[in-house]
Image 1 (cartoon, rainbow, N blue to C red):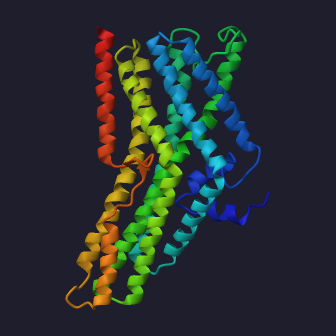
Image 2: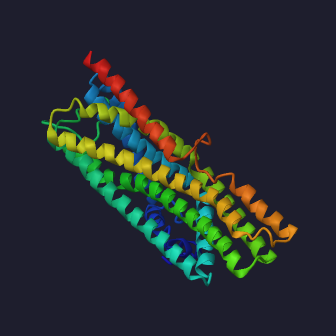
Image 3: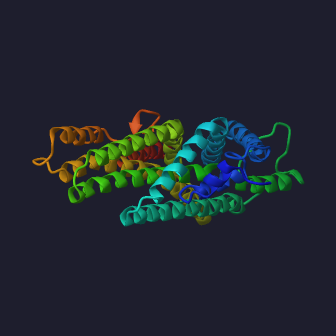
Length: 377
């Protein structure tokens, strides 16, 4: 089937192509057919059965924590893809804007900008591929974990009323289905994190382009047309970050609430499990949580800091004693706007900064120590 112009443009934009190709394969974005339901419906059904099992297992703290981790993880995966599918027009428009701006930056005859674009594109692609590799490794841990449980266990706890899940052939069938569904589940969850990182990296490219253009003013001289172009570029990146925030802010809020609690629970689980292999696998789960959350907050923090640095660069680049009043006003306009940081927020409440990330870790550890004291007593 021939690709549309939209598909070609998005699939061939290097900085986003890794994640777009995964979404395109499963028909979450760009392509719209029944392929998406092959992943969303079965994984969604499995997630509901996982939440039902939490009620059944209530009282067995080790089993509840592990099952809750998987239930929350797959709930987030289904939520992410459902939002993608429902709001596919907004996401596709945003990705088209990225492809258009990327092409504009490629056409700038400036070695510094070309080098910057190549460097951040390489970083975004490596990060996306590494996240997929990490997802594949952790998914393998998911399906291997039951082998160390000392009995018949499924990778993910499920409860189906009236069905003996551990009898033959039900157990073998369900185990096989869960192993199969782990792959689309990974593809539903991981690319969104990589999408966010790639988009913030591209925002950084645009911010650094503005900084570079401002520095060149001292060498090439201040021209009204050049300043107007910089102001337009600044407004473009402001709109870009606003659009990105509108797409991800509430998913970031769900991540903030759910994985803060799950990190606390998994830390507690490390203190009560008996087998060394289980310890290693739970440690891998904790690493996945921290790495995924850190990817959000580090990139959000970097974008915020670099956007505010525009003011400092503009102030240092302008020859104030030689400038005409009209040009001074234009530079002041850039400085004043840059003092308001470009932020991606958690539920439009907190900015995504490393300080907020540290606070989340501190809160999780505080609740963990409290939970451990109560359990010991």
